[in-house]
Image 1 (cartoon, one colour):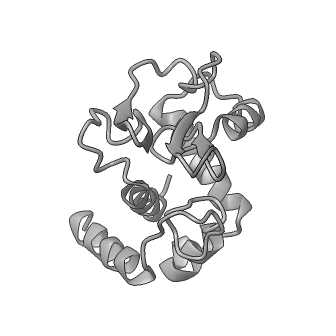
Image 2 (cartoon, helix red, strand yellow; image 1 turned 120 degrees about the vertical axis):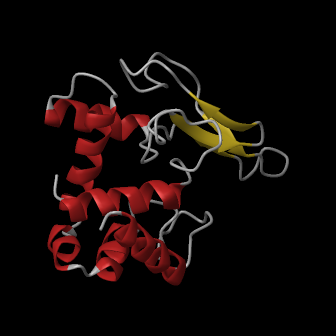
Image 3 (cartoon, one colour; image 1 turned 45 degrees about the horizontal axis):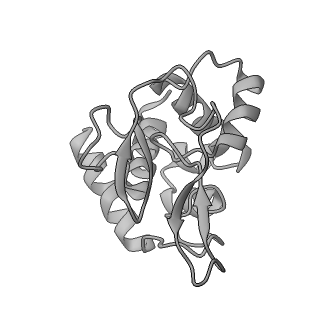
Length: 164
């Protein structure tokens, strides 16, 4: 992993709120999607937290059962169980460890064609190319809260100074 890739992954983790989650003990790699019942973490990295049949977590109640939103998003990059299974097989990942979560996120970034933008320092282009993956990025179609582009660029600049 290059330093620019690491910095972009750190930006995603910040944007998704995992690396700053008050309960994390592992830089966001242990975070389960938050809902009305508040933040939650997990401690078993042998597999995705929802892999053993745990029902998806309610994250938005809706009205009279209509518009309710459930999710299995977990880990530093809030990976859904269905995508975890696909990438786990594709990349031959042994567990849901930090290294495995990073590998999936890097693969997703690659699939969006954002690698070159990241390496060229064109963070804005990389953000927009990845918006369909992460709901916290502007331009997503998930109908969830997204950060502004300016907030992300400011955070990226801050991360650049921290890693210099």
